[in-house]
Structure formats: C-alpha cells, structure tokens
Image (cartoon, rainbow, N blue to C red):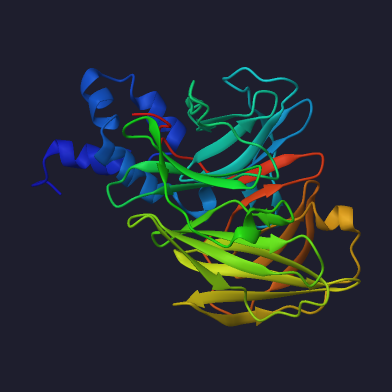
Length: 352
C-alpha cells in the first residue's frame, strides 16, 4: 500500500462511499471536486453501488413522496424520509416508467413530459423538445432506459399514435432524439395490446407485448441496444386459459421472467432465458385467491435466497427459493394509490 500513489488510494476509498457522502465530499477541495466529477469515477462508483444493501423503495401518493430502505432481516420497509420533487408538478402527478443505475425515467402526467431524475442527488433533465419529442401517453407508449457500449445512457421511446408506430432514441451524450426503424406485426400497434416498460439486461432491452384478452397473444420484443435491431421471441410455455402476466427482471445480469397464470388461484413460475429458449427455474405453490385490486398492487424483490411479494403496505408473503441466492432483484412497478420503484442510490447524472 505504501507504494501506491496518494491519488490512487483516495480514488479507491471514495468510490466505496455512499452516494450522498460523495456529494458532500465534492466540497472538500477543487481537486476532489474534479476527481468526483469524472465519468471514470462515476462509472466505478456506480458498479460498486449496485448491491442489495443499497436498494431503496420510492413511493408516491397524492400528498407525499418518500424513500424507504429495505430491511433484509425482517423483509420489510424501514423508516421513510420525505423527498421533495426538484421540478414543477401538480399534486404529485409523477409516473415512474423505467429505472437504471439510480436514474428514473418519469412522466409529468399534466404535461406528458418525460424527465430523467436521480432522486438521490435531486438532479433532473427534461427530455421534451419543441418538435414534440419526449412526450409520453399512458397505455399507448413504452419506455426503456439503457446504457450502450460507449457508456451513453439512452431512452428508447415506443410511440403508438392512431395506428402508426414510431420508435425514438434519446442520447444523454448528445442531448437529442432521433428516429430508428422498427418493423413488427401490425396487430401490435392496436390498443388491444399492452406494452410493458423495458427491462435492460446483457445489452438488450426486453418488453412484454400482451393482448388484453384471456387466452390472447403474448410475446417478448427484444431490442439489441448496440445494433439497434429488434426481434420477437415467444413467452414461456405457460397455460393461457386464464390471466397471464409476465414480469421481466434482471438478476445479476441474467434475464428472467416471473410468469403468473390463473383466475381464482394464481400459479407463479420463474423462468430464465437461454438464447431464445426459456428454462423453468422454479415453481411456487398456487397462491390463495387474491382480489384483482390487490393483485395489481404487488411488486417483488429477492434477497438472501427468498422471494418477497410486497404491497404498498409492506410484506404480503414469502416464498423460500431452493436455489442459489440472488444478490438483488428489482423492477419498476405501479401501485394502485401509490406509484413506486425500487432503485439503487448512485451519483449517475441525468445530463452531461
């Protein structure tokens, strides 16, 4: 250690600090401010921050926005701290659409504007432009946030307007939108199909596209973020004689789907994608009847080998997993009465 330059030692220590402590450290001196502002520092700090102990739950209702830690010992939420939105809003009309490495892509429902927001640093960036880019319509559009091979954070915006589909990519590096081609089946443009938010894993964004009828068509659309090519793959082979819901998740950079099926009793299977084929990882016993309103409220996360199904009020039930424990697992969710997401605290900036 005595042979290491002081700069290297300081760099290694600071990249292990919590995100909020890094922000405070910027005021120590000009040299530290310059060091902590470099893209190399932000990238390494982010890679060391994406751990289960750094997960937080953000919940928004009509009156408050709060952040809570996840306590793995009792599998519940910790004490909440109030968050003040740094941008103008009306009655907390903020929807969370996607998240990655501490950044949230959100929509202001009264103006339809898209923003990138880091709730830890409070920094944000408006993505709307005078030429009508960066405006989101719920139930018609889909959003995915990702990082390409050049470490450029980007937003993929799939827009359905009167039977016409447009696909646009926003680049944080160049701060602009551009159109890219997308050829898909015409029926997927119909409002009878629901597009999920994008889940980023291994250089690909994944979306579920599900027909809004029992026994309807369900597929996964894959977007290679470097070649910018799309392809379609099938859903896992689950029964289609009831409600079908697929929740896409990234577990340690391996793509998974929680597929739930049924009507009066829901069966949930965990699948992983290998190439273009699904492999079943586990099945849980049928879940006792759950009201539709509560079923729409749940979200999930995994830590210490267990899978927890949560509601806005806390833990609903636990499923013990007979497999290698996951470090962390989270995805964007919509709660009835609450809007929320599970995210990690980082210093990644929404703008360059």
